[in-house]
Length: 89
Image (cartoon, rainbow, N blue to C red; front, top):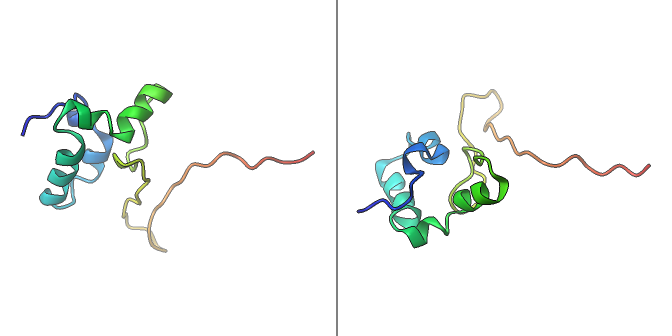
């Protein structure tokens, strides 16, 4: 499989989830990284083009934010950045 995405080696998502099964990693790569057309469908690449910064590591190529399972007392460690609520005043 040829890798057309030039960010595959530095992809925060693939690095963060590299502990997942090899088959899972290869599935992500085959869906989003193996051709230039597929790489441009990757929401991480679109985020970089629009925001001019790297997306969060837990942002999947689909654009979904996944939880990174870490040893936390009460379950999953999910950090979702949200804008501050608008306060009437």
